[in-house]
Image 1 (tube, rainbow, N blue to C red):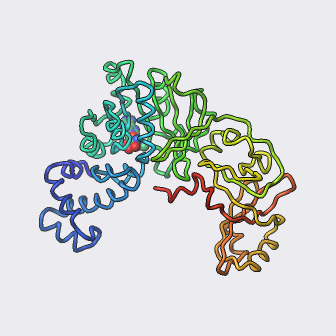
Image 2 (spheres, rainbow, N blue to C red; image 1 turned 90 degrees about the vertical axis):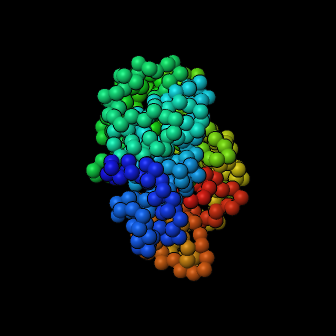
Image 3 (cartoon, rainbow, N blue to C red; image 1 turned 120 degrees about the vertical axis):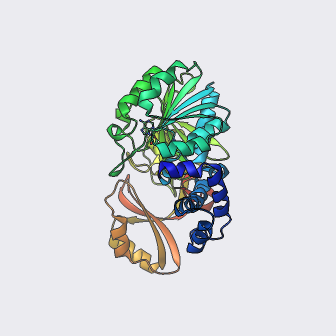
Length: 400
Ligand SMILES: C[S@@+](CC[C@H](N)C(=O)[O-])C[C@H]1O[C@@H](n2cnc3c(N)ncnc32)[C@H](O)[C@@H]1O
């Protein structure tokens, strides 16, 4: 977005045009654009109509506050989900912090949650247009259009011992998303400098290589069925110890200790559970429930004689155990008139798309198959989801 368009959107003129855009029954239509053109020029009309669809997406990602904010497409894509921002804000409050310096705030989704939690916010954004929108989005905050690496030393002079830095380095390059620390912006060398000098919370991609990170606690954050981030905590002694898994929702925050040995491998039982990816990533499976056994060494499917109700687990009842062989499964799918087939796999070489082509599902029934090594060779487990024991991975559709 052009800086001049961002300034106009955030001005009184822009707010008026946004109200008009919001009143259109179909903001994406040519008719809506034509109607807005009677009140303003093409640039502002297009930007205002675009905001309406961005705000709609923002509400599903962030919550109602998303409808009051101004967005760039990138800013919304990079924004933290609302329930996760609010959880992180509560962690900062619980640790006794009163002030946050957000170094790379984008449109300000995280900072907005910090303000709403009663924290004072100084936010820095390098992109001029984005910073302009953040200024609108963060009433009461100090928003600087600046390179964080240039202004950090000055900001530090005003910091107190209850100030914490937030860093959510951009993970996009010209080639798309990156998991590599050397590609993030602001640069990782700067992030390291910050976390050495003061308390900081750093949001990182969930696929980050743990061995590249400093020896500080990392929380793997789950939201709905997704593993959404790895959060690194510096200077939270007494509040954060060791790696953990967290499952955030509007109703509760569940936590498990991480870095544990996997559950012991045992006999395949009548029920199999798929753990939440945050628990898998954090190495928390043994903490979910002592009665669970692993289906095979190093494989993140758990099994039990009786399902354990847990938000960390999605349970499947095993109806049949077939050899790991696509022809046998094809016959089963045909004989049982399975038209809707969900294929899950771990630890075996299966291309679900190629298998689906060979299996040719057709018919009124549905099934889930889990392809996995077990104590007795690889198997195809024909399963049914247990409706009463649906954990995090089925808490509704994911948001972007
Ligand atoms: C991943 S986004 C932050 C998203 C934000 N936490 C939210 O929830 O809305 C990272 C932002 O950092 C900004 N950025 C990158 N390098 C920067 C730098 N050196 N100084 C200030 N901002 C920077 C990018 O322009 C981008 O808007």
